[in-house]
Amino acid sequence: MTKNLEEHGLFSSVQERINHKAFQNCLFACFLSQEEPKKVIQALKDPSWIEAMQEELLQFKLQEVWTLVEVPNGKRAIGTKWVFRNKKDERGILIKNKARLVAHGYTQEEGIDYDEVFAPVARIEAIRLFLAYASFKDFVVYQMDIKSVFYGKIEEEVYVCQPPGFEDPDFPNRVYKVEKALYRLYQAPKAWYETLSTYLLDNGFQRGKIDKTLFIRRDKCNILLVQVYVDDIIFGSTKKSLCTEFEKMMHKKFQMSSMGELTFFLGLQVKQKEDGIFISQDKYVTEILKKFGFTDVKTTSTPMETQSLCSKMQMVKM
Image (tube, rainbow, N blue to C red; front, side):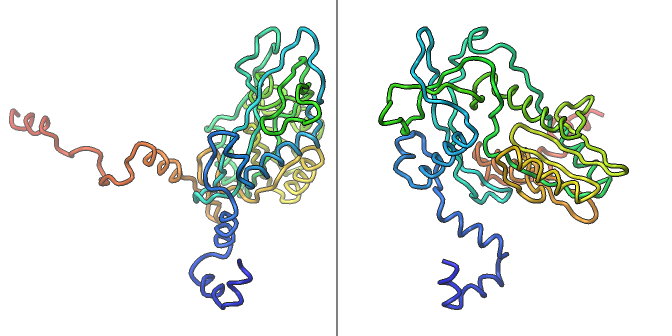
């Protein structure tokens, strides 16, 4: 499409009006499915979602998540289902069709399918403190996304059904024995956190004494900070080479994608400038207004009258 625009002399005029990167993102979005399917039958009719599901199962194979086996006597298999989401950037532009295979964790029984399940999760206050410290120390914050996160090793014996639409034609009655935790298994967050934290601690990081999702690595006078929120990681350092080294270290262990400088995280829109880091929640507010049908209402600087009837009556009495 870009080539055709260039041949007709239109591409240069378009560039004069809009940012080149935004234009490329819009073109890319044209090849993605704009709607999230409600059922797997709908997704299997769309090449974009089929590709997304195949990508998810490829990660399962690369990470050796499970093994196809016969159902052992006295054991039951937990159901699985597909969850489809359109991932958008901070401007609301569609950037990816994401298909996630999740387990029916609600059918698990405590003491049989799982025991301890607690895992720490970063609070929004911790993210704000992280950004405040980065602004104070004047360093750039970066973001990375782990493609397949809940792949921590599990100790329990768990079996799941084959993914809907991707059953093995030769062994349709077999199930998968889970070696590493899947999404929505009760033990999944704990297994992932232990896997990630162990890897970071083994590579010279220290865990925060108060916030257990914050990891710190010191190099003489410099410091590298890493904040973890499930499958999203933000990091920054007073020395740029430490960030580069951290990215290489993570790529050795996990399937990840580097997302460059932090611009959007947990509903926060982040702008990193020379004079500081600015955060807002414009996108979140817009979504809330749209959800409750307030996008077309009249705006006002004050949500109520400056002088209500009650206050006027009180003034008359006085």
